[in-house]
Image (cartoon, rainbow, N blue to C red):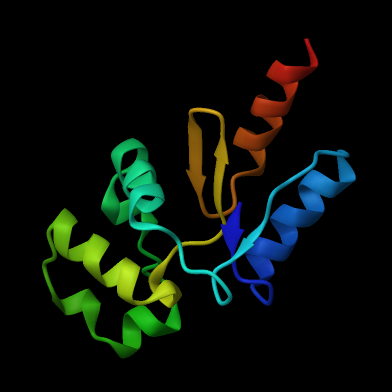
Length: 114
């Protein structure tokens, strides 16, 4: 799981997995930025636009709502500025989510309980 320790959505995701006694490897993006290869895995599965936090303060401050960005441009901006990422980014094997996705996470965990 990738996120920011002080992000409410990241804290909620960590609590979700902790309550279900699931061990999570958490990477605080303030301490260690996401690797370009890892980000590209998320982009390949979810698309670059779905990783962009269009509701976030940094998105609005940078005026990105008025720009038309291609996937490569979005990836460059995400790598340069972690504040633009829709958090948390969660990877479970070959499954990926960006942002809060409790229903999806429950499905993942139900599949491992069998």
